[in-house]
Amino acid sequence: MQSLPGFRDFYPEECAFRDGIIAKWCEVARRYGFVRYDAPPLEPLELYTQKSGDEIVGQLYHFVDKGGRDVALRPEMTPSLTRMVGGRYRDYRKPMKWFSVPQVFRYERMQRGRLREHFQWNCDIIGEESLRGEVELLALLIDGLRVFGLGDEDVVVRLSDRIFWTDFLKERGVGEDRWYEFFQAIDKSEREGEEKTRKQLGVLADDVIKVLNEGAESARLDEVEAGLARRGMAQYVKRDFRIVRGLAYYTGVVFEVFDRKGEYRAIAGGGRYDDLFAKQGNEAVPVLGFGMGDVVLGEILKDRGWKPNDADITVDVFVFMVNEGEERWGDHAVRILRDAGIKTDLVFKPTKMAKQYELAEERGARWGLCLKGDKVEVKDLKSREVKQMADVEAVVAWVKSNLG
Ligand code: HAM
Image 1 (cartoon, protein in one colour):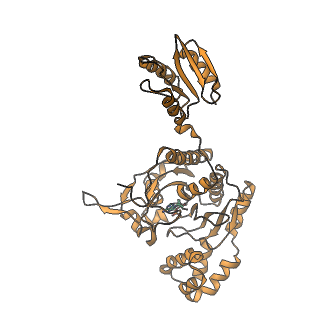
Image 2 (cartoon, rainbow, N blue to C red; image 1 turned 60 degrees about the horizontal axis):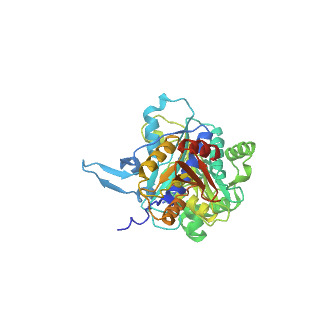
Image 3 (cartoon, helix red, strand yellow; image 1 turned 180 degrees about the vertical axis):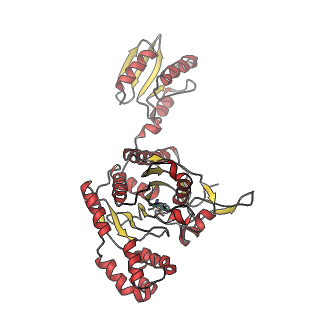
């Protein structure tokens, strides 16, 4: 029986790859002073039906649980975050800087870069209304790409401003009930082509297409770009009013990250969503954030030959057994090595030496250990150089001084 379409099994090497990505995300977030939080993967259906927009609601995995509750697997983290913060907003000093790495679930049409589950790095700044928040968040996002060796020649943050568009709509007397539809048309314009977009936009088409092609003024974007220039990151951003975000709740500066060549789907996306708290029945709270998935990023990194630190799937020492009856010594040796914090594996019983070597190699062991009379022999499994030592304690000292 296979896993469901769009769901992944993570064999150890794939798990190490995924964990390598997550470890980098956590490291960068902490470097920026963000703290980690988490929430349940299963939430009341209602949390999503009103706030996230029709597109994501259409992609929900939802069912009625045994207690008769309508529940859904989280398709994104943002509504859970706002619920959590709404409940204890006064307990934390502002601005709050929180991150999380949830697995999220969306019943999407399957295509390259889009699965039905993914891990999503979420970083949000809560309680900051100034554009200093955008500068800090975007700098974190950019460093979240740089840690993987992605430079400004590889990726670009396409930066836009929803307020520009809402002002545009207000000036033309378009009622709020039609805004979501309008943003959906712009969000899809790149994929669907000008003719279809024109049809969807109706009388607004000429004015909109002009902005999409030629750009427009935005004092907010000027300020954000100036801040990023001071952080030495201006070359990563490009103003682009085609970015409006498919999700319904964004209210201010918004952005999406793409590879420069445009070969992959979006790597990350986010923006300011100051109204979501109020929509959940809380006091208004200024907030902004982004999500970066492991799928597109993983494809790009694989294509570039990026490798995580393989310490997750290797051991340092492998204990061999040459003769019958060496199990006692083997157990003694691994106990001492492991208690000293050295990653160690062993054969469970003496078998053919060729088999033991194959196993040691697959485990990625650097040194092999075996009993030699009343001494211990340590073999460098790469250079095949051999050393005799008095006991396992001596091996511990030697391995420790040679690790790293
Ligand atoms: P989003 O744009 O829907 O935003 O998702 C963010 C990122 O998650 C995307 O750029 C993409 O890398 C990845 N992603 C989304 N759907 C899939 C999928 N089906 N398969 C693989 N990867 C996917 C949000 O979810 C917002 N809640 C982010 C946010 C946080 N905004 C403010 N704070």
